[in-house]
View 1: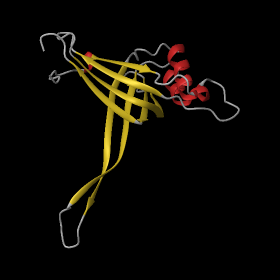
View 2: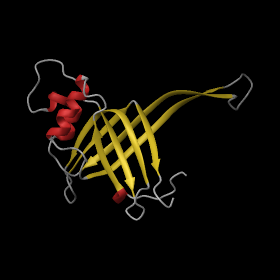
View 3: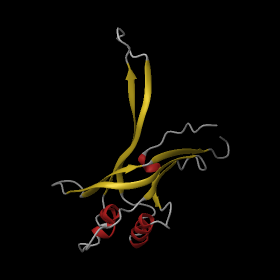
Length: 171
């Protein structure tokens, strides 16, 4: 039975997991995740995940409407804000390039999976999980407003995405 629950941000938790710790990119992400205890990712806000597919319409000569839509490239992107500044997200973006010293040469960009788990406490055992696979952070920002919370923010890209529903007892 599909999940029909309605969730709010209070029902969510975000975790980072390394998909393949044997690769240099996975090792870099694992080092940051362990050093900064990023599971779960705390104090996160305004998380978005967006999937777009480039549709290419085919128009025949003399026809105003397209006669066929062909799917094109699929892109997975997103953003996340965090009300805690410790350099973890910047280091997840830059790997050893964000470790406080300038690396002498090339360095790898960490890759990880980002899981968004939504579970309403009033309905235990029923949850929805969105897992964004092979994530790389591609932007980092710091916002210091005059009358609000200081936030760091990241943008990311990923290779693919999966969604899973879990129905508990009584569903």
